Image (cartoon, rainbow over all chains, first blue to last red; front, side, top):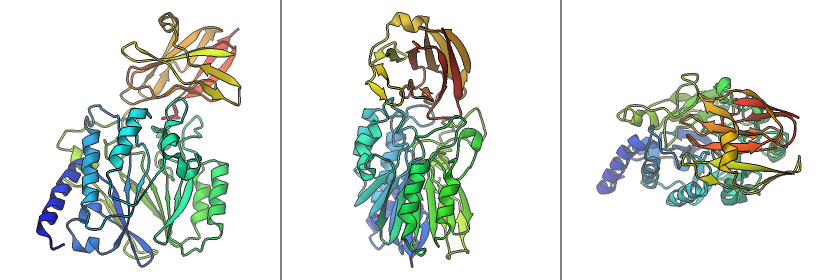
Length: 311
Length: 123
């Protein structure tokens, strides 16, 4: 932190972030997940004390070009600059879906090229419904299907934490919520079976893994079965994107956290005809795309949640 | 059994689709550019304010239906039974499907699955 020039550059990057939005940085301290505010990574020495575990990026919507943000490439670029300017590079980055807006090949190609600029060892993704909206549902899997053998769900371990990537955007039933499905749920049960309850677990999917607003399909219909399998674990973090705004819930040892988009905001639940891009005055956009933190002070029951926006 | 599928851009350019095999129904949607005439005579459904309008439509067998997105957010139209499925339709884009078999076809938007509708095809 003593290198003034780079510190300055980080400050500049932070200003960019304020406009562009970004991910959420998680660090691992004493075996407990301690999410901290990404915005602090460059400015607050305390925030950099933990070992960066991973960064979550979501809803980049490459291909979107309407009023709510005509330059989603620019805001993603600034997000990438910010992450690359962090004092310690995260070894792992996850993208929680809606990589593209219309599932078109050129959108995927550009997104892959841009995300490839992130300085990280490992990148993992799950698809959003915008990534599986091509008629043949093949474009996402052609590019990102290898990790899951084209199933869309898989798990991996990183720094002592067990990560479970799930897909809840394919088996839509009329009326709306996302679905995990029996096959995927059975796979999760098998995946968790031999794991010690002290293993920290991170689950990530595109749509919320708890019901935030049913009329707009903001939830996963069979997520209760998933949650019941996770209750025995001491530290569980459930991450999603989809709704382009921070919503959080803590239930026992399970923290649910919904990330912002790097592209554009969406309305609060139920405001307007549907979850469409929200056009806000230019000077408000930074507030809508800023970073919000989840701070877990002590495990398992003492926790502090802090929402803040950048401007 | 084949049906013509087309998806028209707002520029009236016609996109052809890759063949989509729907194993369950053993239907094949052949990648064929529908004639402009067919799209012109098709019954119309619009996607507006996150709803299909009309949500229920009755047509004669052999007729086509054209769905047009009038929202600022992409939509799709997909049959519950996998009989047809559009790609993402951006603002003002359309998808046309011709129904060669009588029956009741329920459909939804896979991006906003609470958007639903029904086409009834009479003999």
